Image (cartoon, rainbow, N blue to C red; front, side, top):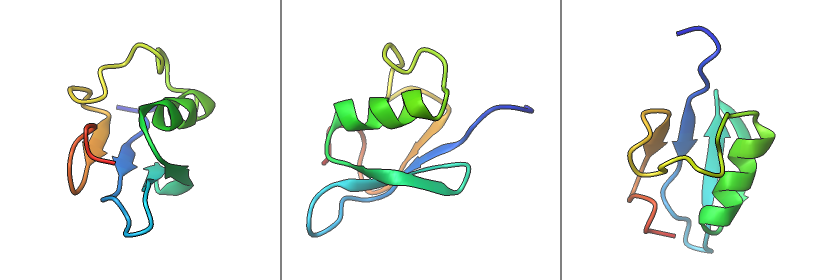
Length: 69
C-alpha cells in the first residue's frame, strides 16, 4: 500500500525507553504510550490519539508489546 508508514518499536533499552522508527527513520525514544502517540502524530499518522496500539497492523512491537516500557 503506497503511503502507509511502518512503525517499529524497538525492545526496551537497559537505560529505559524504546527507540521508535517510522519507515526506517528514528523518531526518538519513547518512555510510554504518550510519547509513542506524539511520535505517531508528528509522523502524520491519522488518528494517532485514538489508535489501538496493540492491534494496529502499522506497528511492529519488538521485545514486548505496549505494556512493556
